[in-house]
Image 1 (cartoon, rainbow, N blue to C red):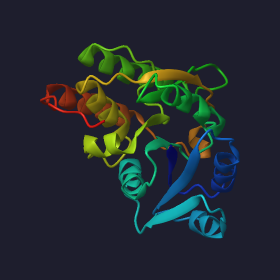
Image 2: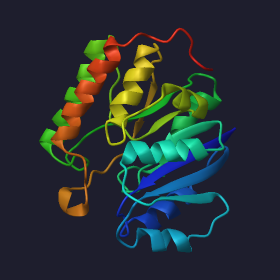
Image 3: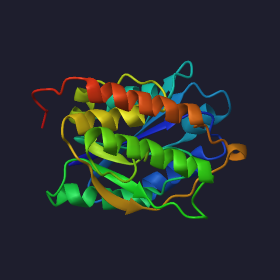
Length: 234
């Protein structure tokens, strides 16, 4: 199996070098590729990516910022692996956890795996950020009669063809809710494994806001009222 690690990047010149180094240093249990999409960065991110040299790395550049969902779509369209996982470049997530997400797939226990964050005082950006995350996750559980623990997690691992079949339209952070809503609407319940997490603050460049939470709930409601597809690609 080949795993495509998809990394959307926007104005991360202070972190992108470390993010690449950490992602490529992991001892993965399968072949990998790292597909980085520079989503119209206006700082030195592009120059740093241009100096990166690893046969497993591919860089794609958007001329203008289009949003996380759009960057992931570009990466997915270019992915050559059978499976994919999203890894942000902000160093909040530890790529050393990715083999843990792969384990249930390689063992034949799961097709879709989410990394479930356990928020604590050292890992939470703020009280309201955590409550907002839990509120969006609860909305998904109520609407779809499910019990997932972390809808907004970046670590979503699944077959590339499954993601392509979802037809994700959200160009920004709403893609997290749209992906989960469409999976749950197809009665695909993600397998969850615990992961480590360290949130950064606004002064460090955190971009998500309360407006993204409101949009996420609206997207979940939209997906709940749509007709469930008759067939799910395997």
